[in-house]
Length: 465
Image (tube, rainbow, N blue to C red; front, top):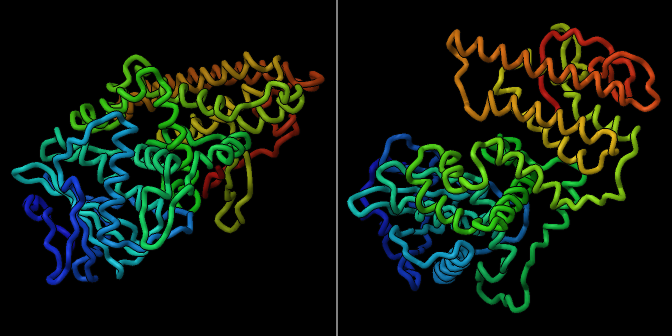
């Protein structure tokens, strides 16, 4: 059994196995020991809702193959190095309060990842971190950063632990690894002289963002299972690191991040509210963050103005961005077939929460296209983005339940308004079609206006991103 709840703080001094030799770090915050399977706390990851304790599994296995065999004496040194790098990034002194007992569990399967346990008692919060060995180095850094950020945020928290967003852990971990990855994690008989990593993933990420939209702020905020599965996690981590890097570039970026972790997170149950409170000069609502992030991604991608699309290519790209590819089954016996829906169909027929990621994806694609479009399409693309942004702000930014009769009526009104605006923009897009061929609105056509077969939707079986 891993943990019940409301464990005594003295537990964080770590009840190590008899005969084990725990090693303590120079600051006294970290204690590490190698343990057997029974003491390794291998229960399935869960989260305790009851105040006073929690269990989280922040360690999605990384795609990198580099592994480190953990030694207690070297591990506590590595933890101190990671902490000092994190404090330097945030511009903070070392004022830790919560102890972290680390259990090195060679018998723990790597696919189970790392396990962070928090305990609240009379002297505040303390923690236990269970690690498999060997462990992928990126996973180790992320696990320690997760524990450090949780400890920082919980210094001012009561029995309810602060909520640490995944992008913050992944983003700051990526930055620390870029600054001095090999020097953070020590291993026996391995030299690290001159073996440093710069932001080596920057160019690879830049090339990816030139070919595909970055994850939206909503996707970074609440990543789905597919977003953090396998190699997809590395793209999530890279986007998270870019998000953190762009935050730090703000004139008050570093102080805002400090305020976010130390002051705002303990005060709010929802970290997004805490984020807005930490950056009031820049973001008044979540839609502002989404817009800023979209422009930051475009700027980072460094699109060359000389590589703009022509009118015909812009038309095609715009059509592809606005079409929503799906697979449909016309009858119970029929095989699924590909089809495209318009944004209006998604807004009208889908649940607002289900439609939001699709519309955000379209908005991100429009932001990228805006930087390379033919000049004639720039204003039109801006109006499409404004329409989607307004709708998302009304239906997602305020997060209404849409359950009462009054709310249902409001939602219907918002849907009608945005669909009316999108239909008007579709007519303007038809007028901009190269050659001015045809008069049908592009909403009923595929790429370049090619006729699209009518979609007799029986049942959707999945959306294709």
